[in-house]
Length: 256
Image (cartoon, rainbow, N blue to C red; front, side, top):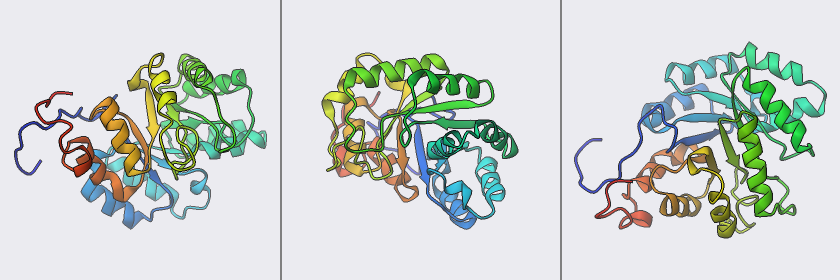
């Protein structure tokens, strides 16, 4: 930090297990990645190359190297995993991970129907090869999953070998954990937290109001995902109580 302020909540340090900021890269150029890392590398814990953008991204290997040189792990979006699975190309997907020296992978079923035991089998297989993040929730806004099912899915996928489970919201923050308006399904989140440890969940929260809600509920070291590159530093100020939305939240309560 550039100067000292009292009553700033204590942030975990990298490599973090909680307080993660997962950034959504939807097609940044190498130069844009370099600019992002010049300002925000200290606040980025992991980067997702959104859905299947890696299929059409020029100079993919070189771009991955820029992230790696900064010590920031990258993974392909879960939609790419689903695209391989639905075409019966899972082994090709595994080879793809090796080809690009990927250390992380996302398993999801937001766009295809997949029995839970099959999804858990994929998680178990990939967990022998890479660190797995497993996404729970549908990209279909008409498909409402009851809280007990979210809990059961998250618990099963963690048990199958997932490092973290991701609460689905899409890049717009308007499905899954949220209503179409972007409003948090508060009862759902609170019920999940009665059964699943908060440090095991990454909550996709692309909208500022959603980020503020989770920080106020769970503190500065909540795991948040699908953060836009230009929102990394603004999010960090939300986490630290240095933006109007959380300005008084941490005063006289510096330890979180």
